[in-house]
Every structure is written in structure tokens, then in C-alpha cells.
Image (cartoon, rainbow, N blue to C red; front, side, top):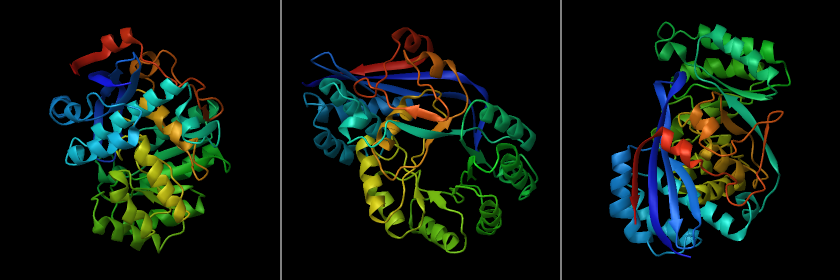
Length: 379
């Protein structure tokens, strides 16, 4: 089997509501769907988020010259060929390609990716991940999500840092967490994410209250820098609080994540399946974290509007004894309900690993054509 060409398809759709994550706010969801084509008619599916022109140029100049004619099932070899070319950017393209290679390996062997990774479980609990909103809206959403059968949620706070409350004011942040615990009950898993907006003293105040309310994790309180200062800030806070501290979603490959883990700067490590370098690298980071007894709870981009990355992450988590929860973006869009021929469905708060080969999902070509805004095939 040989790689003959790669297709990039940029898809886009208006978000159902303004989506806010910390200082980021978007009104459009989407990304780049990647298809790796082989001479045996098997196509691997992946995705990533990068400006389309940059991605297309990198595919033509840096990627295809290295992988055209290669066997896509030789994933370790391909990763090593592509890493030097893409570590300077666009880095997410490496992760998107790696996911597609694993999809091909699964399809060609007739096995789900989770089984190829040494499957540990057949389903994973998800946490629903709504956007940052005012406390009264979050309260209504909490009631809705509980009624829909979810058992875990991630609350986004930091309203005073992004113009949704008085600058520096934390009253609404406390209100969001406190009312969620009251509405959802003691058995509901609650995580809290500041989306990199807090300062040290703010994080310290919030962490004490989160511990009292039984929060399962406190995510990314500080701005990600990918350097020693980021690690020092996390270590300093971690030594002063009791609620589990999570982070690392911006880390690219095990080489950036390694020090975060080795220095015990986080209690939970959160690499992104695509952003860290793909299924291959996410598995390596999780294995590295397990040496220190640190569980892995991967980040999932909530700005895609489709579930390709969710499914890739599901397969990895299903192979990990130390895995926690799977992030599940909260809001449906046509990209989510139409782009895949059989969209994944959460049942009683869990996603089940597909029995179909590879990722276990397929694109609907008609839906792809409806929501496509750019496309290129290089081969």
C-alpha cells in the first residue's frame, strides 16, 4: 500500500451562539478535514485547525515530497519523517496526518484503532463542555445537561478577565461554580477551567473554594507559554492547593510535555490529540505520565463544530488504564450532525468505541460539499 495524494477540505458554519473560551470568542466553527488517499482505495480521515493557505503550502512543499509513495501503515516511520519538517509549523498538520494514518491502519486490518492500541475499555465517560456565559445561563444549561443524562461537566470561569464582568471581579465565577454544585448534586463530576485568564492570587482564592465544593480538577489557570515560567507558575500553585491541577493543552509532542510531567507541575496532563502530534504522540505522553502516576485527560478543541477529533481521542482513552474523562463540546451544528454518516451519540454520559475499523466513522461527501469553503488535493 502506498500514499498517492492528500486532500485538505476547509469547512465552516456559523456557531449556534458566540463561543467563548477565556479571551477567545468565535462566531464561526470549522477546521480542515484531511483525507490521505492510497493506491489500494483506502482513505484515512483526520482533521486539524490552521489557516488554510498555510496548510496547503506546507502540504505541497514539506509533506508530500516526504511521504508520497510511503506505506501509510508505517506510522512510526512517517512520524519521524514529518516531525522535523513540521515542528516549526504548521504543527497541527502533523497530528491531523497521524490520525489519518491510524485510520488507514485500522481499516486495512479490519480493527478499530482502540483495539490496535491494546483496548482497555469499550466506553469512556464524557464531560460536557459548554461555552463561557453569564451565571443564569450556565444554571439553565446545567439543568438541561443533567436531564440529558450527562454525569460530568466543565465550567468555564474568568468572566471578569474577558469583559463579561467588572475587571478582576470573581463574584460571578464563584456564583457559577456554587450554583452548579447545588443544581447538579454531590455525585456529578464538576471540573473548572479559567482558560488561561487568572493570576496567581485569583487562582489561589478559587482553588480553596473548588476544593470545598468537591471539584474534580482546576484547569489551565495561567497563560500557556510552553516554557520554564509556565512550569514554575503551576508548581508554585500546586504546592499551595488541594484541588487537582490540570494543564498542558498547548504542549506539542512529548518533548514539550515531558518537563511538565517530570517536574510534577500538574496532577492531570491534558495534551490535545491533534495539537500534540497525533494519536501516536498522545499515547506516548500518556505512557510518560503514567510513570509518575499522573492521569491523562486530553484537551479537545470546542471550535471545530464536528466530532472527528472527539473520536480519535476516544480511541486513545479507551486504551489507557489511567484515563479520566473525554471532553465533549456542548453545542450541535450541521457540521456535527451531517458531516459524518453516523454521528457519535452519548448515552447516559458515555461514548462507546465503534466496532467498525479505523476511527469507525465516515464522511458524508454531500455534506462535505455543502459546508466546504476551500479545498486542495496534492499528489
